[in-house]
Image: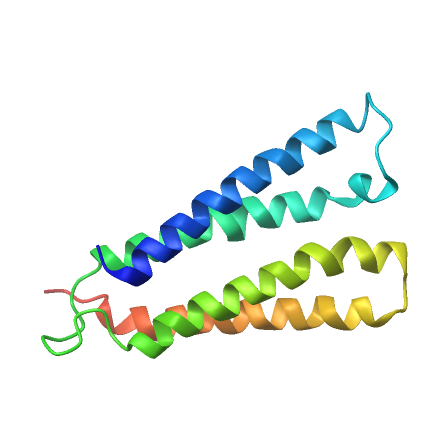
Length: 139
């Protein structure tokens, strides 16, 4: 298993645990008085599952299992793989903080950080597509 795949899969597992804990906090919030921000974690919960867990697991396995790009570069361009990882995770971590903060403090710099987080995630997705598209071959 290539190092980038191991990193994506292990990171996905960490996000999976964090998503489950976030879901637990959201469920407990209806029974136990928790800090106000806990009630604002629904979008964070969704992104932890879909981007943190599902998307990263898929990307990691795709880098490993898709057909070879070439004999010299079996998995395409390494810099695009690492860029995908960095952009996607930086965007997700920013979103984890910016999304609830934007609701708590509307009109603040958190809104700008939320837009930046979405942009970084989009760029990470495009880096993955750019690196993977040529590997989708007939033979």
